[in-house]
Length: 313
Image (cartoon, rainbow, N blue to C red):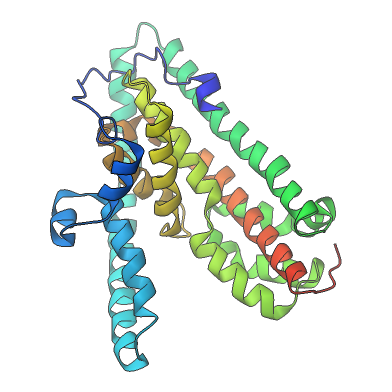
């Protein structure tokens, strides 16, 4: 969708900075994959090499589960404590977001006060690209997977999920919607408590496909606004980074803003580009959270069918 509509192309949004070159531009795909493996994790953290950090975090988390409980539990408590502190810090910073958005948007509006139409037109096409891609994923891709892999009726399942989906749209929070999702999938769609209790909480944490899709569109839009044409390889790196980064996205409103900074850093795009999408992020957050919750519920139905359960859909 973003390659078809090109929402950022030709948009004069005050981004006149010169980009020396993308981090993924001068290397082959194989070399890029090799570079994901950190030579020195401390150096990777110090330099903000996000792909290497994510790769190390996945390995560290996996092997944490392989050690004795006496070693594992202190690590889990430590990282959970760090996570809670960072979430409090993040939410504190997010409270100032409206002021930041007001300043950025005011600057752009003042610079283009004589001709605001191109600014609004560009942001409108960007929103159309995001919403259109989310609709394709939620209305075509996921129902087809439910129908042919899960052997269930996606229309009936959608009706069973109407309350959680409306809640997700209004709250923009997967975690806040989780109790309703658990109830709807278990009592309406007929998935067992054993499956819902495992799949849905896990999905609310790591199955952020709506968020990952949004991050890809946002990163490509920012690149286009800077006048940078990303090759298929570079777009592939964006997709891979968005996929990995979305696994760690918190199920709270505006968590995608944190993830987009990771993606921009990974591909070498300026973080200032985030200012372009802040003005409409809240609206798009409602759509992508709804897709996240819908995807989690579809995953629960598919897993239940694979376990031989008899469903209501």
